[in-house]
Image 1 (cartoon, helix red, strand yellow):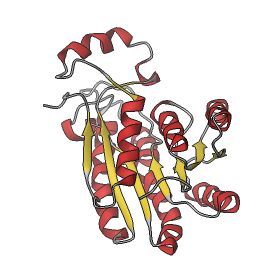
Image 2 (tube, one colour; image 1 turned 90 degrees about the vertical axis):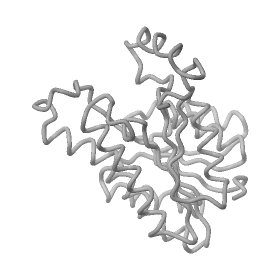
Image 3 (tube, helix red, strand yellow; image 1 turned 90 degrees about the horizontal axis):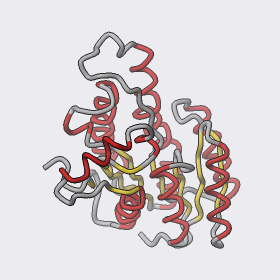
Image 4 (cartoon, one colour; image 1 turned 135 degrees about the vertical axis):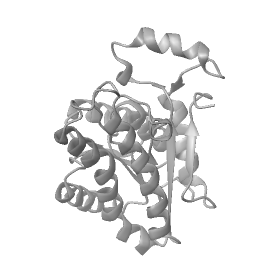
Length: 246
């Protein structure tokens, strides 16, 4: 798919990987809808940077775990840009809970993480699918995590939610073919604000990776753009982790 002049919706697009992806897509000529839930200032700053570089972008609020908000967001996107050609399901949340602490993994925690990380991705895909089918072309990239492959992560519910994202990717790829491609980019450790307060831990991890470097948000954004463009690929789980899981 040629990304120039296409319309991309990036959930959680104002910070971290989402921001890097929004900027990368704009530099490739796409119009970008920067979704945010609570980070209005970050989303507006990302939009400002895109416009400053001569790109087209707008910030739209929606809590992706709420289907009605997602549908309203997509309606606004159509009013502004006419369609949505690409969806980057990046919005995710976590709770930091020791893996052995099962009691702290309460029902509320499970509901919150699955609401955003899994149901939210489904709601967004469902909302844009009719537009992509009408255009007979579309691409979706979900953001997974190596936590979903290894079972380790910031919490047990988070790891399980990301494993579910990997499964959702394959199921959506089947459900939406042949017009819409669905793939999943799976980062390992990435240098984002999720490491805030744990910078020393990050520095200790880097020398133990095969490539001896922590991935950057730009690294992940480049792979997302490549997956969006590749027309002969769907249902794939693509790991970008500097060799962390080998």
